[in-house]
Image 1: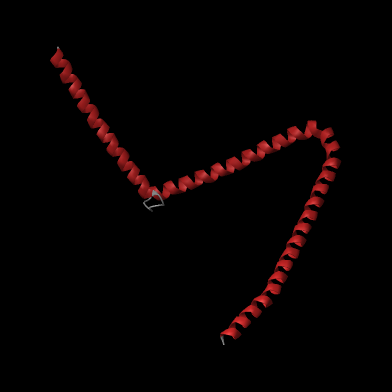
Image 2 (image 1 turned 60 degrees about the horizontal axis):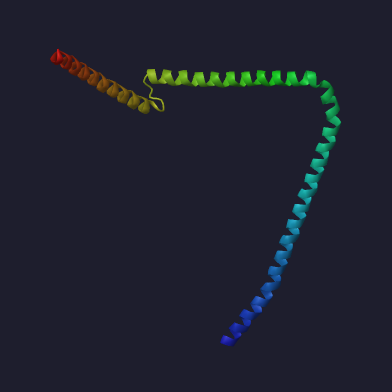
Length: 146
């Protein structure tokens, strides 16, 4: 019985080795095919880029005194519009949040704002008390030295 199991086990290993080798060959063939295809595609893209650049360079050089300032101007105008739109959206968002906070609708972050306000008021009160104490000590100290 043990001999049969051992023979079956050895036979199973021998049967698995060709399957593993076949899988490895298929994986390698797939990798080579995919890699080769991507390499060819990369080479075609590079060649197309070089050809287009070669054809486009003379007109760009001839028109560059006009195109470069125009491109810079267009970029600045677009940047201005995008920044203006972004600042507008931010302002509307802030005004909306402030309106909800002031009308008592409790927008997100209101608790943190209230906590910061209380902490700032507490610190200001402490500084006021210290200043009064320092002023009293300074006045009593100058009266004693006179």
